[in-house]
Amino acid sequence: MDMRRITARLRGDAGMNTAEYAVGTLAAVAFAGLLLKVLTSDSVQTALTAVIDRALQ
Image 1: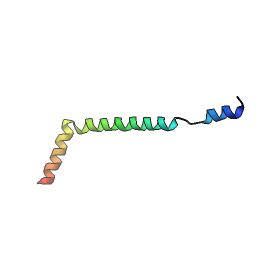
Image 2 (image 1 turned 90 degrees about the vertical axis):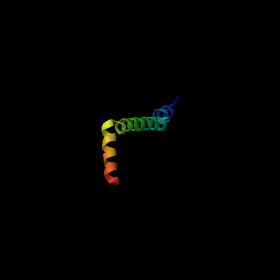
Image 3 (image 1 turned 45 degrees about the horizontal axis):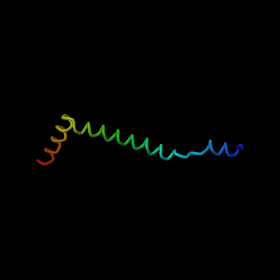
Image 4 (image 1 turned 30 degrees about the vertical axis):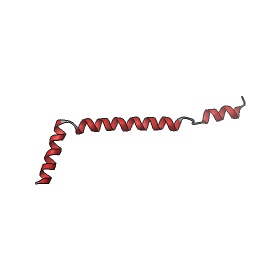
């Protein structure tokens, strides 16, 4: 192999987009799971119910 081909292979970013999408998707799923856990907790549901009840009165 000549030096240009080696340099081109080392500088190539093939697969980087897929890896970035995978990390972004994983972060979004983790955040959605955390948000679901928080919103379904008893204290948050009680607080949201109180806010909605006050708004409807």
